[in-house]
Length: 306
Image (cartoon, rainbow, N blue to C red; front, side, top):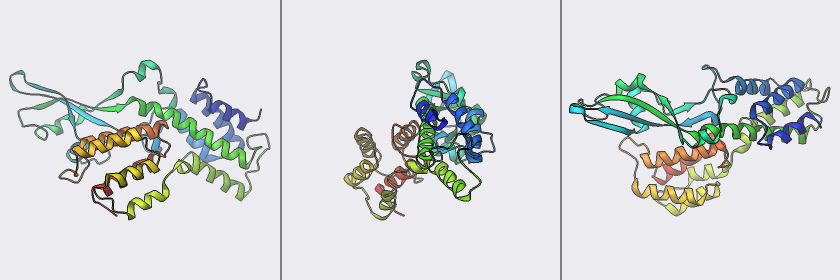
C-alpha cells in the first residue's frame, strides 16, 4: 500500500492515534519536500511556540467566572463575568480567546475527561483588576478563572484528523504517486504551486469554508429583526435546527445589543458553543469562517449592516 493510501486509511480509523498519523505525514512531507506540511506537522506534534500563530481550530472562546469575598463572611461564588467586561478592564481584546498551544499528544480524549465538561485556567494574576469593577469596593475577588469547553479542546483531534484526510485525498487525486520514493518531482514550479495550494485549501481550512456566497448575502441584505430570514441564512449554512431554535430563544431575551454594542451573555454563550462544534467537526465549517458567518448574521439581525 502506498504512503498516501496508508495515511488515508489511518485518518478514518479512530483506533490510530493522531500523533501516529502525523508522524506518517512528517514522512510524507520529507518525501515530497513540502516545508509547509513539515512545519505544520512539527507544530502539531511538538506544540506551538508563543511567537507562532495557532490555526483557527485551536482558538477557543472561553467563559470567565470569579468568587468574591465580602464583609462579615459574605461571598458571591462562581459569578459569571461577561467577556467584554474582562476585555475592557484588562485592555486586552484577545483575552477571551484561548490559544491551545499544547502538543497534540497531550490532549486527552478519554471518557474520564469528556465527562467534566469544562477545563479550568487559573487567572488569579489579573483578579485584582476586577476589584470595584464588578461589585462594590467591599467585595474583592478571591479567585478568578476561565472555563474552556472540554469538547472544543478534544475537537482539535478531529480537526487535525479531518485536515490530514482532506489533504491526502486531494494530493492523491492530483498526484497518485506522491509520497513514493522518487514519485513526485518537486523541482517543478507547477508541482510546488499545486501542493502549496492543496495545503492551503485543506490544512489551513479554506476548502472547508461553506456559505461564501451567503456571507456576501448577509452583508447586502438587511434582515434587521427578521427572525425568519436569520433562520434561513443559518439553515443554508449548515446550522442544525436545534441550534437555530436555541439562538431564536436567546434573541427573545436579548433583543438588542448591550450598551457598549456587544452581544449579550446568552448570545455569546451560543456563539462559543457553535465555535466548539466547528472545531470538533460537528458543524462542517472552518472555525474562522464560522465565526465570521455567525457574527455577520447576528449583527445584521440587530440592524448593523456593512
